Length: 389
Image (cartoon, rainbow, N blue to C red; front, side):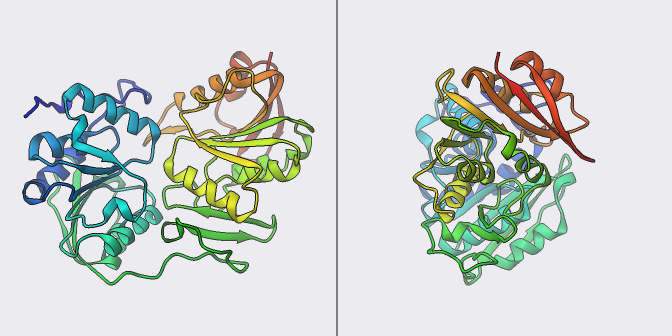
């Protein structure tokens, strides 16, 4: 069996810093709680959801002999970090990456899950497992105690008949769920009559916003779900002031694709690209675009910032950047987006950004992109327009 140490795991190509780690105590506790079950499971019957940088996948393979592990990770940087860590550990042949659909969990007997912050994401994952996994499946769902709530227990109890809570260790805990219940009905939208369902219907929520005449679709991990977060809503009010005739417009960090849909509506001659590194966001944006009948106008791409886009190829970029890396506030969450926007914008192109007014992004944008004006502020948010040098 290959040599393996958690200490060798890295976050790269995700942000690396002294206060950011590739493995934590919850990863170790999940693997310890599930050790016997993993070792008894057959090839292809162990599933890992939400593995951040490979600790659960590679730990299950190296320490407990799991093979043909099916893995779903939301972040593209997480997938790439797992691949790099697996290559270094000699374990690249022990797992397969999957999308978030029935094929991920069909016939699964053991599921290792890093508990998501979003209850909607947990509900969707639990529902998918209960519907499609083996009836003997056992789910080992863990996290840091400071992020756990009793509501998570209630969500799991909706889909499983048995729930055990582990003892705490190093400020971590594991919820062990088994005996899947009869599947609930697929998730449906609210508001106007729901269009024909897509292939992702059983993992997607949909809502119609009458004030904008806009359908929004969201998988559970997507930021803000089917709602319009207040920063995005504020940025939308500035669309009439944005470049009037862009050839290419990009929604950078698109989330559920709201900005992409609205700029496509407002600039009917533009080619619009929506991009995000989150698999959940990309699936959500694709469904949002489909529901709003803009599939021929908007391309949705999973990408790490804008690395797949050529330099000097876009006229207009819209961005509502994150300010967290995981649970930690970290400036690099937005800096990478700004740097790539500067590379991809054509000279004279515009970057429109909305951010919390307590952040110093305006001065950063002036250094990275070019001339930057504050064009709007309310009680919480600032909107800036940056022109590419």
